[in-house]
Structures are given as structure tokens and as C-alpha cells.
Length: 484
Image (cartoon, rainbow, N blue to C red):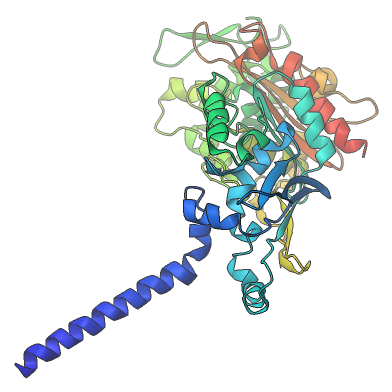
């Protein structure tokens, strides 16, 4: 009998010990992640008991709380649709998204780093105030990018190459987060249903995720980098220059834009000229010479295959694997199953402009407590040497030629050397093209790298192309940075 009691006693102690560990995990170790869960209604309702911290972009309030007379005490207000892709929303009906979700524990004052403030509030009886998030976004550049996209469906990402700080992150069509922040749950839910039921899906952040896009010819920057990094090619290396090229093992032919030779009637063309005139055939030939493994390795060095915590979570861009020769050829000029985000292509240009060094992209300058103590101030972080400094210099010069005397001419800025590359990606028979520009300026000491993607052919179906639609948008964004 005594033995049985001992067993039962040990079992009870084990159960209590397990419960203690589980509750500790929930209350302390997992507290921040649980608080940040946008689907946690208890955390959301509790959040209305405190004055939620502000979100600022270079000192401009883009999300803040105002006192109300209703039971929720505070109402969240937003700067407008231009910032929706960054701030997200804080809604009784739909939870949280964007920075509101990613930094929820800080904004509500419940992050573990705010422990002493929490204790002080408890002892003093004073209300707990949330921390403020200071973003890297330049509000003027953000607004210019949003206005430049206008009614188009697409995205813009602008990055400071030397630091990785994101100066603009825009997705269109945008949305007004104020429509979802109202305290009338029925009204907020009705507004949400209107946003999600439309065909243009404004709540999808096209800058960093959603359905990724075929890159088309902007992928040629990655290809040129892979070629030079292999040590077997230079910008002056020549490739065959036919009017059409039969994909290996198929009866399918591919063509350059205009269905002629690449920039010259000569039987061969240099890699530099193939990039300048954005020709598909030479890059398909180059891809077959390099092989998919070398291309994939280079793409990974630029960040393909990785998700980045901005702290918004980005979708990893894709360079496909397991391809046959025909598929490899198509992938070599940004077709087949290549899929990228605007963030990824901005990172490619930023690395080239930064001497080959890829910086981790970030939206956060600092997080400050209510008493202005620094809770978090992320340091600039290097992700690695995407290409050598020599390769970066040579690719940069090819991109400069593409803008100054090539098919990316609408990226030009008077008095400034701009490095850039346009793209016009096909999406299947009869489907509208996806239009691109990526680049940086000034070429010799870049202050901004940019990527612009416009979906649905910019409303022009298969008549639109990157230099016509995307390049002028990128030019406006780059000028907005350079003119500050």
C-alpha cells in the first residue's frame, strides 16, 4: 500500500511540475509571440486598455492612438493609403497586420524588454503606455512612390544600399486602415469584406509577398553576375547572335524582342550589349553554358530562397531546380518558373551598387519606450558578399549603359549616372505582361536602389513594356531621394 501511495504521490508531483513548466513557457518564454499573434482576440481587447505606441516615419506619425469616450478608450488613426502596406491595421473585427502585428508586444507595452515599466505601472497604478516604432521609411519618398504608381496594380521598394534601410515600401492598390480601425465591429467587418471581395486585393502586400512575379529581363542582372563570377566570361565575351533559337529537345523557338538579331547584324554579340539591348537569345545560350546549378548558387547569394524579417515577413523568391535544358534556357532570361518580389530585385540592385555586399533589409530605425529609453536599435547587418567588387563594378557599368544608351532609357535622370535594367515578363498566351525596372543612383555612390513592378501590363495588356511604364515610376522615386 505504501508503495502505491509513493507512486501516486510522485505522479501528482510530476503533473504539478509539468503544469509549472507549461505555465512558465506560456507566461514568459512564449509571451511575446503570443501577444504578437494577430488572431489572439484576448490580447487585442487587452490592448485597448493602454495607449498603444505610435508608428513614425522620419518623425511623421503614420499610426497613433487618440482618446475616445467609448469603452475601448483609444482609437487607432492612420496617415492614409500610401502607408497601409507598412503599418497594416489594428482592428477589433479583423485583428492585426503589418507593423501593427509584427511589433504588437512593443506597441502595447507588453514586450519582455519593458518589464520594469510594467512593474512600475503595477505599483504606481498609472496606466501602461506602449513603445513607439521609428521606421526607416522616408514619408516623402513613400508618397512619391505611391502617387507614381497611381491606379496601377504593383509595388515599389526603395533601399539605401549601404545600410539596407528601406526608404519606401508601397503596394497598390492601397487601402485606408482607418476603415478597419473603427470601434463599430459591424462597420469594420463590412469595410473589410468590401476590401477582400474586390478583384484588386488591396490587402495583399505585393512589395514583399502575395503571388510573386516572373522577373523577365531584370533577371539578366543576376545572369550577368553569375557569368562574371564564374571566371569564364567578361562583359566583352561573345555569344552567337541568331534571329531565333530552338530550345534544346523541343520544336519551340525563342526570339529577341522585335524578333531580330541582338543590336547588330554581326554573327556574335557581347554579354554587355546583350544586357544593354535586353536580348533573350544570348542569355538563353549563356544559361546553357553556365548550367542551372551555377545560376541557382548566384541567385541564392542575392537572397533567393530566403524569407526576410523586416520585421514584416517576406516571401522567398524562387529560382527553380530540376530543370531540363529547355527550361534552364527559359529561366535564364527570367521566364519559366522564376518568381520574385519587388523586395528581392531591389536587393539585387542594392548589392551591385554596394560593391557586391548584400545588406539585410530593414524597416526599423529604433523602438523607444514611453520614457524615450531605447528598447531596440537594430545595427546594419551584412548578409554576405553576393559578388566580388570587380564583378559589381562591371555589372554596374553594363547597367549604366542600359540606361544611357540602351533599352532602359526612361530611367535617366539629368546630371546623374543611373544604373538600371528594365524587364517585360510574359505570363502565358494572351495574358498581359508584367513590367519591371530595377536600378540605383548615383551609379558611382548610390543613395538609393529601387525596384518597380507593375502587374496586368499596366492596363495595356501585351502592349505595355518595362521601359514605357515601370522605368518612369522608378525615375520619380530615385529623384525624390536624390533631391532631399
